[in-house]
Image (tube, rainbow, N blue to C red; front, side, top):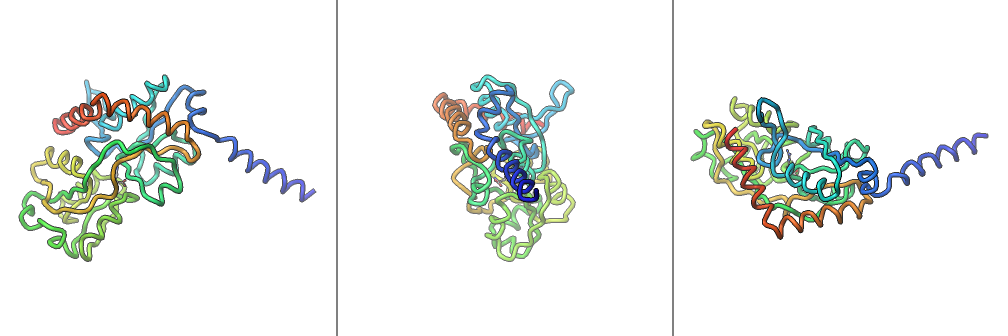
Length: 259
Ligand code: ARG
């Protein structure tokens, strides 16, 4: 009896896992693409009030829209903490993660990646009053540096000697901590640093140069989804050849700066 019970349990688990398959098939059968973002990252994904309504907009959203359009399905956006995105993908709450995400070996174990679609360098936000004081990574030696939890900047921050990382889930909270003198700098990517600085006179992008985390942002899909990866890569290639990605980034940057 026991053996039978254990075997059927094992079978259930195995079938449960096997049944997942390529997420392409799942998306096509429910005719919806559920997209996970951490909407704290202008110009890539951010909240904006449009005609009195709170909307999530940005470069990544435009790209996700095109992928949904090419598949012929509806798109639904889920806003969550950056560090929760990959877990939500693996527990089937999401079909794809697009969030200014760099590929790294650890993430590669958990998700399938698209081709890179945008190359961003690291950028450091400081208080405008400190711009001349904090010009290089050495100038920030031993300081409290804000970094988004679960981001590749947890590693990048070690380029600052003896940095004391302050980890928070939302970039907007890191920016508040910087404004209230609780930390000395926030590491994000350059377009994001510029977007925050352009909306807040008390903040500036520092001249400090840090090595980027990767050769470009990628989209994440559930592991074992080669068909879905191929479909997304086709859309990315089409948009690149049509010059649309450049158009999207210009438009998103403008929207982010006129917040
Ligand atoms: N590029 C960094 C990473 O991959 C940070 C991305 C943060 N994205 C966001 N939407 N807050 O970890």
